[in-house]
Image 1 (cartoon, one colour):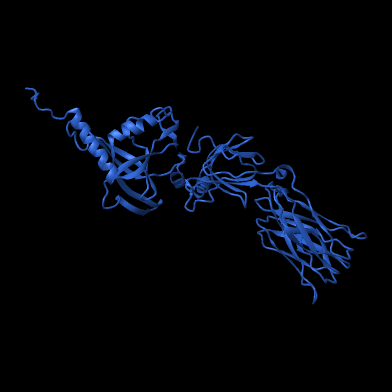
Image 2: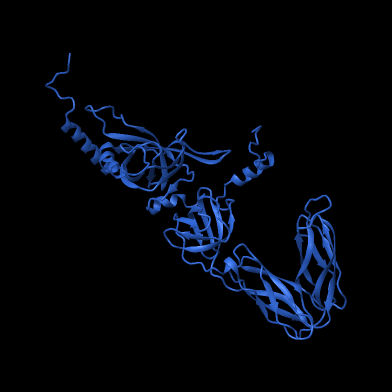
Length: 465
């Protein structure tokens, strides 16, 4: 027996009325969230696994918060993997609004997958907590076919766990959610090249002119301590630093650390006889050295007055000649940013009557390149030689440090890295692949421990190939 044809259990007009009432209620009592459809940038053709996702669009959409007493789930947990957020969020959105507003905007996007309804894996930006949630389940039959139709989607969401997805919607509050999360590499760039400057003091008599290595020793694992015998009363005791080399081999063919030279940071002053040199520590033994002093004028401590910028190799110092005697020699040590920070004296010279003038070598090679512009957050940067791409996390102009993520390849030292949207252009000096930014990143520690157990240079470290 069929239904009574004189009673309509849900006409189109009745269904439209309920849908309109639902839409109105959501606009009155809902929260304006953002819906972020996931696009599949790379997928595995075998099991259709999504290798890389992108979120490049965000659409405002009103939603009713079902969790009126607060977030559900297991709240915040402390586990062996760190602090985990287990909050649940249940939102109700209008079926009509999604199908007539969101669907037309995303159905033509490439690799969006399903566009006719909200799909698991898409994101919701919840402004009340300034947080991103991932849709885990979409319920489309609650209430259960009132007047033979459904009117809402109920979205069960969990906090979004970032895994190097591209998040570039153009909405600042949303894009900033990934500001300093994910695996971040640090690139030290070369800025505007400039020549370092320095001055020196003067010793009238009794400075250590140079240090002669009589035995380079061996097996030094770290820098040993160098000490000089004390200068007479009224004088200044010399200070030196050992320079280790690994280019020489021991009899067994293994590389061993040897003392190549002892450079002076302070030649001292007032010595009447050549001081003794003591070399201790560093894990090695056997190194020995002697000194020679100048009984006339020599250079004293060299002070860096301007570190310059753009250096890729340690520069040499050129001292003016004393006329009659020995011209002083020295060199500067640079830091990772290409700035001269320390001055070393190889020969303090002899025969000076006044403190000489110092000229430091200018930056050469890639260091002479002038960088321009300001990298912007989330833009794509490309290595002009390697073709490697990455996303900008942070650019610190004062130290020329560029923090990037989602790196596709390996940048090459000396290549220019250009921003796609900003046009910023700087040359790479040093690339550090370790995550120095994220305080809880243990990837490098885990990898180092694994390398100690397994030889990953083998084709198959777990067994026969």
